[in-house]
Image 1 (tube, helix red, strand yellow):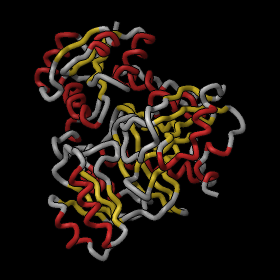
Image 2 (tube, rainbow, N blue to C red):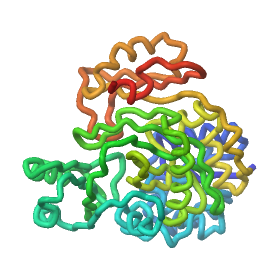
Image 3 (cartoon, rainbow, N blue to C red):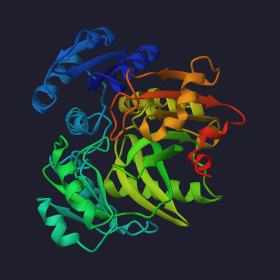
Image 4 (cartoon, one colour):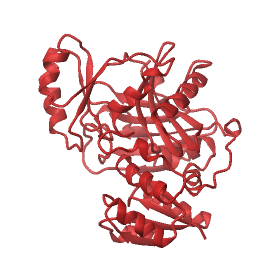
Length: 387
């Protein structure tokens, strides 16, 4: 029986444990601390700090691990280093430099400067947010982000002088592992996308293109995700080809990818590159619901070196997605109530208390996940909601 190491404890980590059992693969969790739910989900648990790469290598080698999986930006580096040390499939250590590897947004912008066909974005790295007012005053609108944070934490849009001070206060006040920031010219409004892929030994297979509904009035929080994205003829092919070039440029070799882009007219702009699966149940549920491809199993098989070639042309074409019900999407409250007994509802969650503003991923908001094989109601696509 092959053995898969999972670096992390909840969410996608436990999805890996469930799928591994179905594949006949023994799941090993590596983390500290370990709670009862994690110990129950995995076949074997190792209480090792994910910051101690040497200890992880020793423990994985002793356990006879055959593949290593990361579950977030913050477990990417140890997973890549351990896989390389053990001669397993994964991403090279050259893209995992602490404080400036593939999880660094500025580094990825620099890597992609030579990708032909991407729309141009002005950007600059700053270490002190007090510099932003001096160096970007008069260059509105722009956006401020921590260089190495996830889940839209610390993201602020600045449209004019009046918003500058409050935006800086918000970004500084958000918990962040990053000591640097990237300031970027704000990409014009358009269709927000994420590209869901699976790479194996340098070959990048695009499984789905997702329409991301973004709250551009506040902090770019993601209010929903719909698959497949509605795109003009030929645009999906362009997006997929650009994504492959981006993944080559940033150095991805093996594993899931989630690239955020925006289409404005005929232009495609890069927002962020993530060498992980998409959150908000994109990886765990939506890709399989819309395409029929078992994405989580594919990630496991890639890490084990057992992934068979994927024929993307044979994937299904169903509509699937998730909507969060928050202050910004209060009009979806009746749909949330309907979802309790609707055949199209795959899963749902009702958060306690009144609706609140959704500002970043990970907050406790109500949501529902849907799937349609044929015609869809109008609330499915954000474009229809805004007519």
